[in-house]
Image (cartoon, rainbow, N blue to C red; front, side, top):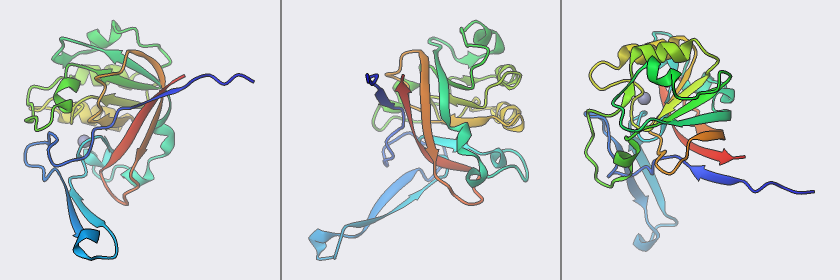
Length: 215
Ligand SMILES: [Zn+2]
């Protein structure tokens, strides 16, 4: 029997205090509670962070009153066939751009690589307010298809100034939103997405580890 070689690409941001964070966010902090080199029994740390830090999902509750919470979302959203497209030199992603992006009509999960990825990889990078994101008409275009998850390579799927409508259109259509991806080293094409959001009871979002497997 011949087994195909598979390659797993980690598309998560490393959670550390130096990563870019949304203005006003507490970001991410790891603090040692116990240290072997202090004579403690083990090394033991605590983390303190914003729910929407680094690579994370938005649950419907983020923008919809009484919407579904992160722990209630079926993992079926986050694991399965996935299409990655690359839209360089674009600031506002429109429905027109998506319609020209060779997205298969049956695409179930869509990840969008933009110029943003280069900003997430730089240590101590400042938050970039003019990051590339989806216009509401692009969200509407996605909502009218079979897509169950859409992801992007910065901290929000909608633009900084007026991203609420973009989020609301997607979440009300029952589409999972995956943000803060590092797609800098990912070629466009078809993959399997493996994403595991933390199962946080009642939360409107959750940090996640995400990877792509080239089949
Ligand atoms: Zn978010």
